[in-house]
Length: 443
Image (cartoon, rainbow, N blue to C red; front, side, top):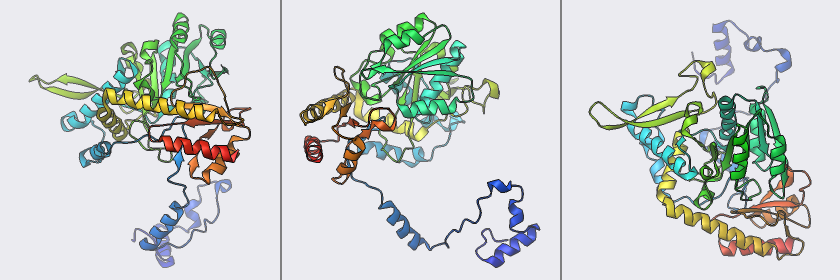
């Protein structure tokens, strides 16, 4: 029997051999779910389909001067990172269930965990999760298990994409999620104190937050701990080259999006979620954790120490059914951090902050442009208010080859004129000046 029916005769022969008509193949599908004839075009030869796909790809706007941020950033990636992770022994590595055959992969994961702990100031990290949003959701679920409570407070300056994901994943879990309004672009302590009670499992915040504002949540952590709740902090890893770590703020669980650690902004993924916590919470942490040990002859070795997933233990005891080991992405992050080094990461963060400050000061000299949340410290991202709708300005600047930023009205009310602008080390002074010039003539 042919594997693919290329002709009507072959199709009829296949149906005859199984004793069905073509309509009979779909008899078990309710009629209201039928989509009708698909009217697919005829197949094309490989050379023709390549040209067709290239034509479709050319419709994407590439090579733009990007000032987009909002959780995903256009950083430079050293060539050594791609050279390392593209090696076949890494690129094709499978889940390391057999430690005797997977020492290289296990050691890489162990070192990734170590790097995340040092970066966040925490005691233990897992082998990674899907992305920053699902990592924050997992932190919420982890806090519910630790405290035995069902209420969570989440600040509205947390990435709105993450908040949407959290509500979607937990919609049928009986979790009370309270989103707290902010004040001048930062978490409102009075709102937190008013809503925090003995049923609260966690307070969830972000630093720098979605508006780029830097905050010190030490006081929020103290408020949470006094009521038996946890402090969960989502972080932008590059900023930790300069900023106070979540661990130093008293955080109980730290998560973040690892895309900026050597991964390209690539149509939404694949990306990397990281998570770290305190050792006393390790048995409630989802995913895999690699540990270092010695064998019977005293030789160093690496093993999967904890992997409390539904494949390994009773399903109702599993800590997660959506977590995974993003092994290649985690290796990419490790390679990036190793190449950059502690001092390199600090210098990178300083460059991003300095260039963002320069651009901010230039933009504020334009007529009708103002800072949305004055009086705050920013890292590499800030919000400006324009004299007209931000989305209209963005469209005009796209014609000049500039992706000017993110229109906040997509996620926040009464921000039609607000633009979120991000600056990385890839943006030169000439490019910053060019953005200012183009914005000046377009307003």
